[in-house]
Image (cartoon, rainbow, N blue to C red; front, side, top):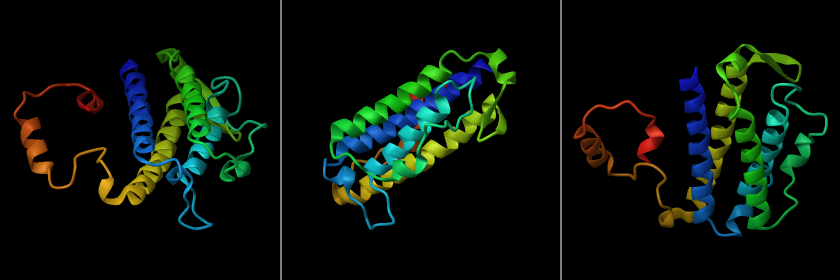
Length: 183
């Protein structure tokens, strides 16, 4: 199980990094840009992720993951206008998550936690968030690509370089490690 816990920590770190590498490429104005009224800006998505993370990971093992103090609807109203506020929310949410998963042990995996009164095993609860956060971080990256257009710096294998990338990977001996260790 420690392999699972180590893997999920690396996965969460990877997606956090993708978001941060996108923020780095986008202008301050771009962080708040909306395609239309029904769409979310990068900043709004960050605010929602923050609210979700604070709710799900605060007292992770001892209280329902949907906290009474959470106002999910308000998360979709962007009421701040600076990169610094965005980064503060982003970092606070991730800190809450990592503080909750860091002390987990194999014996914790037998526990049941609740989200909106629905019981989840610990791995189910973690996997639920490991699907939810990349969904939104993918939106952040997509918005970043739209905003940057031809100035976008790829966060993975750039277009047209797959064959060279694979050739380099297959030129090395087989190894067992998490894929993020090569990034």
